[in-house]
Structures are given as structure tokens and as C-alpha cells.
Image (tube, rainbow, N blue to C red; front, side, top):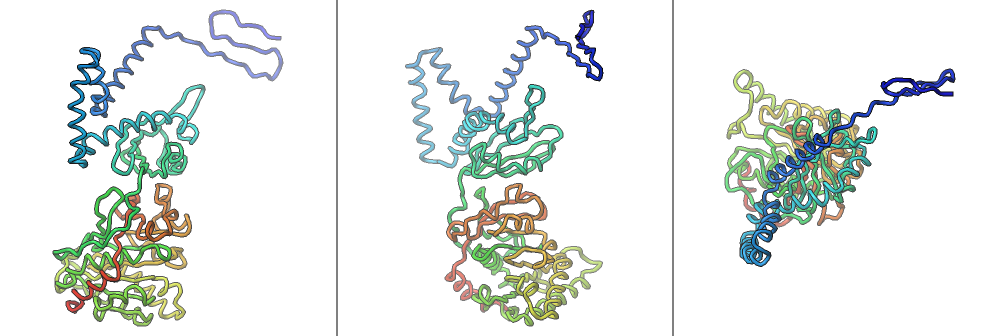
Length: 473
């Protein structure tokens, strides 16, 4: 039995059955039509202004022919537009780069915004869990801006209040599949905004020739390859330590030899010394004449060379104490780069416990105290597990080439890096496609950068030895 409450108050349905919850029916307020029209008109005007501001070229290309057709007829419009089209085609043929920068990428960004992202935004956000559907209303992150480059779409998004960057990083696969991309990477712009990068092509699919040897001596950053956005990849070696991890055939030698190649002019002037540890006797031995007496392959000799590097570091620290806080390379105090190819051979796989202890202690000392006095370490390894390399967190800058397992990406680059797009485990094992390709995470930035190191051939190394071996003291 039910009875209805009297009066004009919100209707309450009350059950006479005990232990039954009371159901409240909310009041419905009718919005006047004029208010609704004003709101819709304001939104349309704001959307038009925003479109004109963000995509002026696309709006002009679409609007001018239409306006001319309405005012003067289609024949006049065609007559006026044709010379502009012909001039645009000629411009694109003669100077493709400037045409793409001023016209091409802007038109493509507008088209991708309308046809790809805005068209699929609502279903992708809801199904991936980044949007919310509450009581018949969709709460969606705001699609802010789309910018196109030669290789990717850069989508700026304003997150919902209460969302975290990790919420987006955990759903990169959903976003990539939803918008038809091969992958998706997430980076932080400002508070509340993220940038989604959807690659359209792979500019690093072709092997790179060796970078020319610098004409002037430099201690870095050293150009060793190319970044995904087309800019040169400069690797910092002075004032930091670098860890390079990658499976067999991933291209660790490309990074090592490109770095040596960039430092050779400074080596010849005495501003840089390269100390090479080559326990495998396969990589650095090919150019051992470049290192002079600072080359070691036997584990005992490697331990002695590391101990000598520690002594140099400690002697400098004693002289610098109270006088300077950073190192400036000179002939008397050159920058010392200690190269260790496959460091696990000297630490985890070394049978002699005493040698293993000495080597591990020397590496830990150099990586914790060396960079302030001009002693840097670059080490490579295949297996990044903690029991294999327990000092990996002492390397500020890390490079992950092709890895065998997805978990190894976070071991090398840090927790959550793979979720932000560092898919090192998906790099092609074919040398022509994947050798030298990797992801860099620098001490100054948590976002990984996709890069490819230039390939230094055997002939390039022979030429380097012939030109510079006599100048190494």
C-alpha cells in the first residue's frame, strides 16, 4: 500500500511496508529557451574564435573559396583561386621544407584533429577508462591542441581534475589502438596538461653513417647520432656517467665508437684521456692503438687500471678541495673517460672473488665521486638485473637499446619509463632496422627520448687509428 504526500514539495513515495527505504524524486527546473540559446551561441562563437586562432591557414583555405563563390559566383572564385593554387604547388616543389612548415603541417594538423582525434575522442576516453559517465553525463578530458611534425602527431590534453599522469601512462596501448597509431608516449607539459605523441612514421628506420670527426676539440656533448624528431643526438659525457644496456647485437658498439670518434680531436690535444677496459677482447681491441697504455683486457689488468683511475680521482679531489667545485679540462687535468665494455664480465661473472671485489669497489667509488673532478664512466652490459650490476643506479644518464623483456626497461631507465613510451623490448632484432636504436633517459628529464646511434664501420675505425694513434701519449 502506498500513499502520496500532499503539497507542492518534491514528491516522496512512502511505503507502508516496514524496513523499506524512502525514495526521493528531485525537483526538475526548466531552463528558459532564451538562456539555452545564449549558452549555445556563446559556445559556438568561442569555438569559432578558438578554431581561427589555432588553425588560421586551414580556415582560410576552406572559407575563402566559399565566400568568393557566394559573393561573385563560382567562375570568379575559380579564376581567383587557381593562381593561388598554382603558386602554392610551385612553392611546395621548390622549397618543400618551408612549405611544410608554414602550410603543410598546419593543414594536416587540422585534418587530423577533425577526422581522427575529435571524431573518436569520446568513445576512446570512455572505453579506456580516462573518461567517466556519471548519471547520464560524460566527463571527458579536454582535447586542447593537435600539432603535426614530419613524423608524429603531438596532442595536448587537459586532464580531468583528480587525474594523474600515471592514469594516462598506464593506458598508452589503449590510446594507440583507439586512434590508429603504432604507439603512444606520454609526457608532462604543465600542471594538469599532458602531451600525447603518436608517431606516424619512423625516421630512425634507416641506419646512419658515422658522424664526421669534429674539426675542433670538444669534451662534449658529443654528437653520436640522431633523435626521433630529426635533431642531432648529443651525448653528454663530461660531468656525468652513462650506462648503456642492450641485448647482443643491439648496437652498444655504435654508441661506444661514436663517442670515441667525437672525442678524438680533444684526445690529440691532451684535453681528454680515454681509458679502455675490454674484457671480451672483441670490441675495443679493434682500435686499441687509440688508447695507448690505458688499455686492459685481462681481469687483473682491468682491476689495476680502475685502481689507477681511483687514485687520479682522489689526487684531484685533494687538490681541488676548497678551491673549486667543478672540473674544467686542461692539459694538466684532462677529462678522463673510463670505458667498460660488458661490465658484467668484471663484476657478476668474474670467478676470482678478490678481483670482483676490487673492481666493484673501484666502479662504485668512481661513479659516486668522479664526475665532479673530471672522471667519467661509460659502461655497457647485456643483463640489467640488480644481481648482475648492483651499481646501475649510480649512473645519472641511462640508455636502453633493444632488451629481451619488458621488465628490463624499467630496470635500466627507472620505474614507469616503459609506461611513458620507452618500448625498448619492441625494437626490431634485425640489425638494419634496430641496431643502435634505443631510448635515453637523462638525469635532468624523466621523459625518455628515442634515438639512434650512428654506425661506425670497421673501415671507419681503421681510419681513426691511422690518423690519431700516433698522437695518444
